[in-house]
Amino acid sequence: MDLPTFPPGFLWGAATASYQIEGAAHEDGRSPSIWDTFCQVPGAVDGGDTGDVACDHYHRYPQDVALLRDLGVGAYRFSVAWPRVIPTGRGAVNPKGLDFYHRLVDELLDAGIAPCATLYHWDLPQVLEDEGGWRVRSTAQAFADYAAVVHEALSDRVGMWITLNEPFCSSFLGYAEGRHAPGAQEGHGALAAAHHLMVGHGLAIQAMRANGPGTAGQLGITLNFNDVRPASGSAADAGAARRAACLSNEVFTEPILAGRYPAAEGETWGDGAEAISDFSFRQDGDLALISTPIDFLGMNTYFPQVVADAPRDQADPARRTAADIGARTVIGDDEPLTAMGWPIDPSIMTGLLGWLRTTYPGLPPVYITENGAAFADPVQADGTVHDNDRIAYLDAHLRAVRQAMDAGSDVRGYFCWSLMDNFEWAYGYAKRFGLVHVDYPTQTRTPKASYHWYRQLINAGIED
Image 1 (spheres, rainbow, N blue to C red):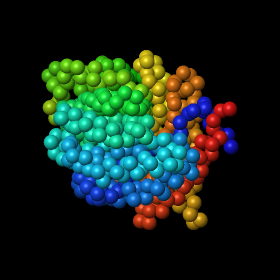
Image 2: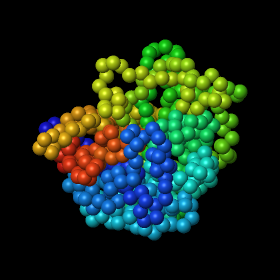
Image 3: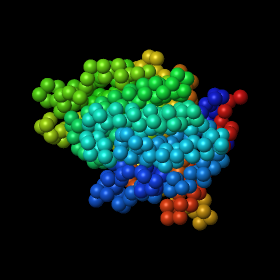
Image 4: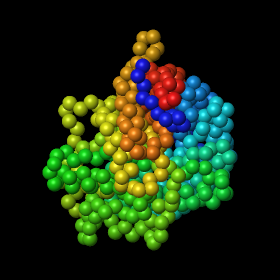
């Protein structure tokens, strides 16, 4: 089989997230997260699904680590559940919650797998949301304090740390579009959430480095990127693409990687009397804090975004959400799509990696911390899962990563999303991204054809 090849030392991994797989939502002192609350809202999640049990990873983690060992990955990216470790959001640590991650890390190391810990993958303690959530600055400080606790406990065995996963989703899907927890639809509040997430990131990086010289490990953040393209050559569509790129990418990359706010933010969210926010949540020194140097950048990406100019949903800026930017996504009738309805175009890898390389001089090394695809994945009569569409997707996107590397992008590793089928947020259990099929009623794990393909790639896809 013709497989993509990568340089020696390239890190192969798989990724998951706490609320999506752990279950045990009411065990060992864990408090409710915003996703526990959101799942109780009628109609918020397909099928009325919740993460109460999910993949029962909390109890079955040895089995899942064995799957990772057999897969041959060098690293496993998991996330820590803040409400499990500090149920009140700040203050007292829950020993039983922290002990779970001690056990998981030890199990990974015994299997020869490097742990990569994400500190926040969207499961904010509900008690902090009740105090304002990411809209308020105190949540950023609480996050830094939590990060310092987890880092101090595990940094002797965990060498790779990610502060936030996809703050775009936390802020704009959660506080502007309302499609994710906490389900808000706001303008100023969503922009404040985006800013305070970045403040929390900067504070957390500093707090982890302060835990002791030489013990911090590699510290970074994972951003999700859209390869934004105008639907036509018109000036109007070009403007829509600028606004969409500001919302999706630059609101985070500019402060974190360049220490500045996006040039297009006025065009995107209005100026003067037309502005949806006065940005009063910004303070002197915030840009220096947010741009605290990181050791690596995590990049998540799945599909391109083609946008066309469109009227704003609300003419009155006071009623406009931060996602109401006068742009609509366009999908061609004949485009190949995943089960999520996302277009398939591997050139997003070369496009985004090239954009990052040329736009941000001094860019730290990049890890692809999520990439993958959802398909129907029916189980055959013999119990196998022939997910050839996923294999084709992964193969094409990895070849594009290699093309970007050949062009000069410093990419150090790739984490496939996801190790196993799981709770896919507002889609519940209807969408499957896993290399491993999960039968939720029985919790039976069945490696798919893509699992075996990925194992072969890991074993054979390294250059001599």
